[in-house]
Length: 133
Image (cartoon, rainbow, N blue to C red; front, side, top):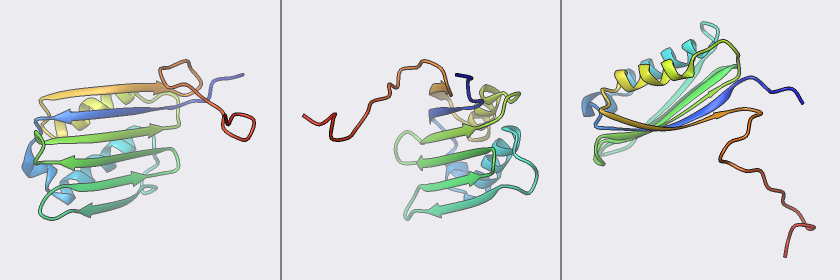
């Protein structure tokens, strides 16, 4: 079976600039830039940002070939979780993740990197009547 291009990076970033984490326009701009760097055609991305009160936000930018999501916790070590999905060969998701950590002023990052069609720590399992015990 031929490998399907693309993958998913799941990251947590810590020690971010709280002013950036709390600014919906700055967060959206960083995510749009990331989606474009993951291969999305110009003007193909759509954004949704939800601001929580008193703090934090969730945002997603999606396109036909990439999507980036963030959930921020300014009150918890100025942290955020990021999900990067990409469906094209020839992009550098590692550089995109580095760009996001810089955009948010993160001091630390941890990430799980998953390439589609390869062996990884997440294992498939079946469900259904024949699997129930």
